[in-house]
Amino acid sequence: MIDGHPSRIVLGAVHFPFLNAGESGTLSEVVLSPYVGDWHNGVDIYRAWKATWFTIPPSPAWVRVVHSWQQLQINSSEDDLRTPYRDLPRRAEEAVKNGVSVIQLVGWNKGGQDRGNPTDEIDPRLGSAEDLRNSIATIQKMGVHVVLFQKYTWADITTDAYKSALHAEMATDLYGIPYQHPGYQYQTPSQLNGMNVRRFAPGCTNDQRWLDLSARQFRDSLNFGAAGMLYDEVFHHGGAYYCFSSTHGHHSPTSLWSGDQRLGSLFRDIVRKSPGEDKFLFAGEDPYDLEEQTYSLSYFRISPRHIAAERYASPFRPMMIAVSGFDDRETINRALLDRYIISYEPFRFKGDLNDFELTLDYGKRVDALRTKYKKYLWDAEFRDTLGAIVTRAGKPYADYSVFRTAGGKHAVVLVNDERQPVTLTVKIEGKQGYVEVSPESLGARVSTGHVKVGARSAVVVIQN
Ligand SMILES: [Zn+2]
Image (cartoon, rainbow, N blue to C red; front, side, top):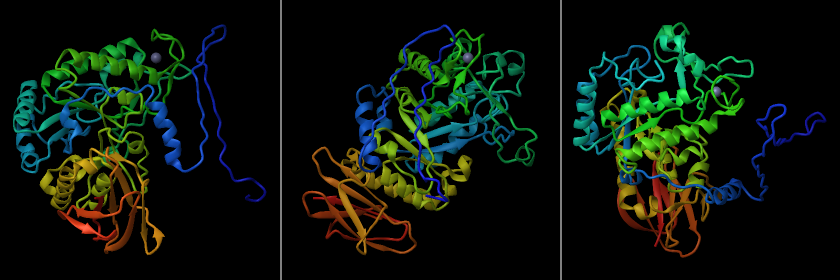
């Protein structure tokens, strides 16, 4: 109680019928399920329900093994023309040298990242379509997959195309006004001061014209021969959930989320014919669960006190996090802890891999460890903290995770973010007798369960 008022959380279940006066329909089911325990118990209920309807979409085999990416931006919305298409193979050399097997190419499209949306046309200032196609082919021959950053969430409202026609395809509110997104302010003083920001309007994903435009752009982009696309901002519509337009050919109102499903099906249909769903990766920025049926890999950024609930819900789904610090052992340790693929992003994805050698060196060690012990760290089920107890001087220790193999053996990943070593005690459920390994020392050593974890490092304790 605070000053006589109860301190509490109120849960309100609200169900919009999407019906106008005189219409009738059947409401979708909404299920609320109470539980006892911590968040794991809640997610267990969700997991069991998701298993009743979710189907894992086809994807290339390379996305399911231990590997890493680099994100590389070659132009922003501010005419930051950094790398002509022809020079891209040179920028891929570091990836080849360091065993980084995918480059996510950003800002290759006309106008650069977050400008001119939606467009999958080339930017003539960076070269020709043939230059881009040739460079992608060369890089892929070098052993690195190229995945193109693409986006069908917005229209840039500063373009002539928007002003003349595209505005009619935007999601509109109850008053007939297109929703708006403030756009992004990147690195120039004029844009940081809001003078030349490219503001957006969310497209109506249930307007057939918008769907056709997106599908056409995507189909054309396949001609560049990339190994996949990463649909940036696939998870949202900038705060717009419903379209109330009466001129889009859909029931008014409609949910934009249902349109996401239509768009995803169109993309999959196109790729199914050629090049084939096992030869082309659909990745997306943090897709929600329905979208995970289209987009096989989730990319996102994590922050301190990150809770790996999505990983716990989907232990084997390819998920990737941004690693952008110059000595970013802490984020790489999170990748190890939560089974995330590493996306190297020096200088906020403008730089080269040799710009952050400390980060790269540690990331390679962690991936070597995960490859050598993939039975325990990659092909085993992520259990978050369940199945083992870790203490420090008798008190519970939080920074660890547990993996369980199909045979029932456990591995416990211990992470230390401190700048001095810590000594931890590990007790794993079931059979005793452990070995320990670490990114710095791949060979297995017998472990008593009392483990010293070096400063800013990690140790994995494996059940014999
Ligand atoms: Zn609409």
